[in-house]
Length: 287
Length: 323
Figure 1: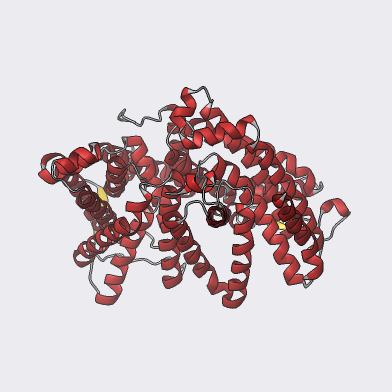
Figure 2: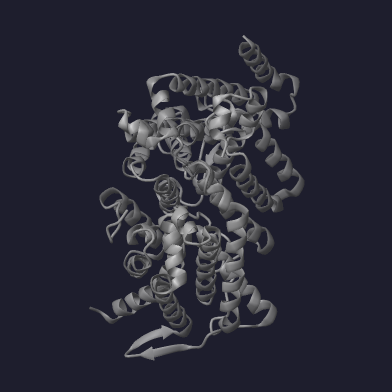
């Protein structure tokens, strides 16, 4: 295997970890409330713009931008839950899909209207230079994004499986009425789930803002990536999202390198459609 | 009887409109309303009656638009001759998306439609034969009447009116056929419908293919009127959004819902564009997003269902749409 190929795969894994991070937010909400947030990718986009604004207004790098973006988006998540999701959850499928899809448009074009359609980007060395490691050259910004995303995704998994908060959330997902009888408030738990899910997108957005192009429509692509990741990993499963996210990151990087940068999105979409045809239950089984 | 009177009034108004309000702007506006009403009515078949929310419907629109312009630009034929080709491609694509996803929950279908639309847009943008980012143009000077290239919007207006009437007749016929009964049963409860022997996946697929074919015709008509198609105007997600929001605002699953939606939103967009110019584009879609969210939150049945419920408090359509 050539050295360049290893370099491409490592780059794919680092980006894939970020995909896994924001996809685990989508999978959490989907698994718990059976609602798909079509604005999920646009949440990531908002996170990127928060990080960008933090940089331009305060000159702060990711140390300041990432926690702020997480906080802002977690707030957005809670607001969206109480203002919209709680009501459309009980409505027909049409209302559920239209509601979050409309939200996606609202966010995307509000940002478009305010910031314009131009590609923005952060200064290249905002995190640090490029490290040489065993002959591989890795940008510090990508390394930071990959490692933090991986740790936070694992942390999310632990939160859901090892803490009492996680058990309460699973109880609500399993049976709302029964959970209520046990003294758990479904409303609170679901709002927390939205805060976590949206917070994860905020963090992911702030992390990739350091090396990604920042543009209002980026949310559409990222939203599809999240959806593909979740359908591969099985919905409701954070470990599934992690494996699938890393896989998609690698596939995307490899196809970008081998076929051409324009085609890397096409490869992911076609992969998604072929999965729907041949293995709709995802990689991990459960539907 | 009362319905018949209403229908005749609406029909007479539609026929007389471009003669009474005859400035080029008004005629063009009327033609655009009808064009979007065709596309939104086609969407309504799968989105409203079958309850499967396609958010990438533009891909069929693009099939028709590219087939019509391609038949002129590539083979020197009348754009009209491209329409059957566009329909075949659209129906084939609908099968590719629909066969695997219509068995799964509705989310998969919606997401797959976005993915396919984006894939097509990216592929076409990178295909030189289809004009890449520049797109394809129709005849600049019409060779004969079959090029359907007119300076005035008036011929387009009546052409679109005829196609809209056909589309609505097909929809009406469908709702009263066996397929319509199946669709209503599936929409109420898919599990119950299946257990009574209604072929749920197949019926939804047929509705989707029918919708794709009609949307493709709308795309072809659009390209003929504007004389060109490029990846943004033929395959951009914003066209999907417009189609969807018009049907949802007017009333998804109601025969005249899409027409009402188009009659409200097309003038709104044209006016905001002429007031705000290029800067208005972003703002229009902010407004569209807000409208969609509000419909979903407060009135998933659309405006027309609100009206119908007020007139007849116990009507079934109104009740079944209540959240």
